Image (tube, rainbow, N blue to C red):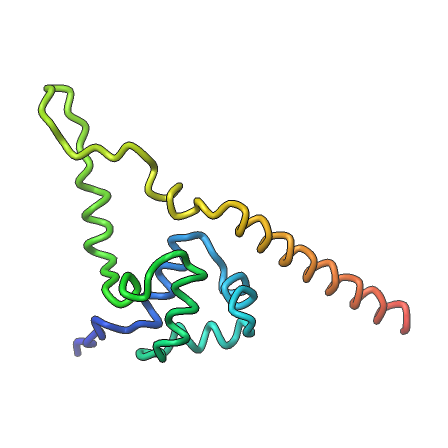
Length: 134
């Protein structure tokens, strides 16, 4: 029995782009102002409304169209086809690390990290308070 895959499952594309950016569901959720569970449900959804997709694309640093047309196989082939040629022939050499370009928004990532850290500190303080009350 063969399982058919849905080639345009927007939720899976969001998930994969998020993973390639090194972002956890919690971080995406915080940026969108929703729960981690909502992000999980969204990533399981085949279709996502345009307004929400625009918001997700902005947080991920891509366009809505980039999410819609994302093809992991093509992305992998793109990165695998960079060849080093010492023979002097012209090849399309990448003069930057594409993953670094994805992470260019250093300040945004720093702010996100600080908010995540604050959230974790708040959780710890709350749990400590609960323990003291026992």
